[in-house]
Length: 187
Image (cartoon, rainbow, N blue to C red; front, side):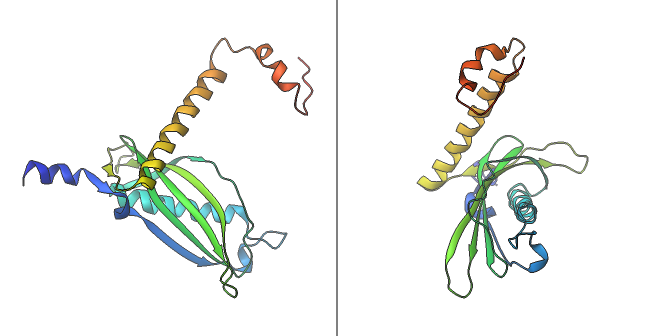
């Protein structure tokens, strides 16, 4: 095998691990308000994130974190929910799986965007140790944008952690900000 062919096996295209699932929403998955329970949708999202990450890494994967879960529109009983997942970013042993959730009214054909979320998955071996994942081949501007957005989310998470978890954190430095909110500080 040539070096070029060996190098190519260390990288995968986004399309190589893209996953799409659809499921009809049943009354057994509804909450007390007659809408599909958010926890049920999160469970499906975790499953598709696992499938996508495992397909990319060719190994077992675990969920490390979930970022930005905003329920934009309710999902009704009888709607067809479609989830689309792709690898948006890879690190050494981790991958960020982007998931888009849409619901379709099967009578009218109307489709609504219900949620987009980002699951960080870590590849594991049989002993539970983290293992290296293949790199990512990005082939269009949307994939570049998704990768860069992951970098920015990671950077912002680190900055937020540094600012609020440092040993010399002083709440007094932030009290003026809290004045604009519905909060009473009683130190």
